[in-house]
Image (tube, rainbow, N blue to C red; front, side, top):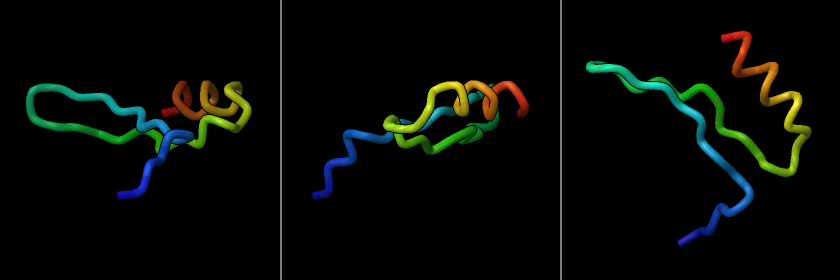
Length: 40
């Protein structure tokens, strides 16, 4: 088993779909994540 403690998965969902918005390395600049998630 591989532990991936430095990563997060950001997603959105509704009644029929799950959409992965980002697979994120938490050591990166959080402002980049905010820009990525708000542009989608």
